Image (cartoon, rainbow, N blue to C red; front, side):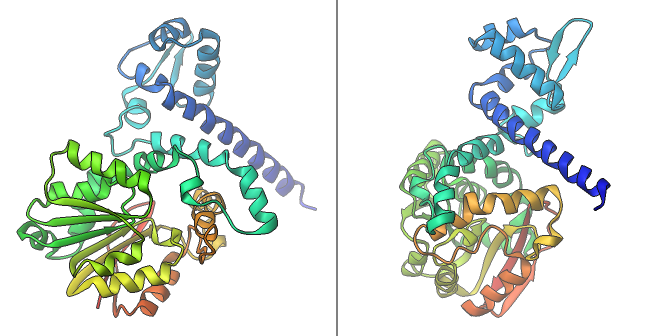
Length: 350
């Protein structure tokens, strides 16, 4: 037995344990406004932060100590004060930052609350329907993906397809399949005011939030449909169809891709985003790959299996995407040249 390997694995588990508890405390800091209270406030004692947030000082002090140990915030021993730097605020407190991680905190801890139900699924099969996954999950997912949609969708992702932005600026029909709370749909509607954009999602809570988001932005070129993804084929032809991080969650991903194929105009483009990882788990031994694979049984796979779906899981890789695309009828499949640590972007056509 290799003692070095034994020690490495044991310490890796301890590190992951610390990470799990830190994520829980990150959730507390995000939901109770501790990070936002520290942003731009300068050095603070635990008493000052407790007063600022109207929270219990002893808990605030211990939370601060944990955040310092995790290297999320800084501490000055000379003054006994805690401080959030500009860089830390950009990541932890600024919702409009392209690097904001609050959605990660928000998504992780409520997902872990479902572990007893997931254990039942391990024993008897089935899963947890998205409608039962937890009331916080739709908003958490919205917050997690919002920075990418806000800063990169129109400016980088769609722009990677030659001629597509000009076509959309002129006016086109766009569909956003699995639109969730509508952040991606609204981003496209704002960027291309001459185009008509439809967001479709099965979850009633998400569609309600999406409609509210569109209304708050005063948009008149966007609408939302609460329906199964495959119903996209019933609403005419589209010049652009998008699906971001959702096909692998579908009950019937093959049927959805076939419906997208049928709804796409002959010269249309389908932009499909999936997690940036190999279909081989042993190739994903890195922090991002580890996160994707860990999320899968707790969220992506279980919401599909809950309805006797295919349960593809979070990671299908380029190999899996190509096979599914070919089965749906697509003859064109291109990996777009977008440098993104989290997603691979594919452009498909008939």
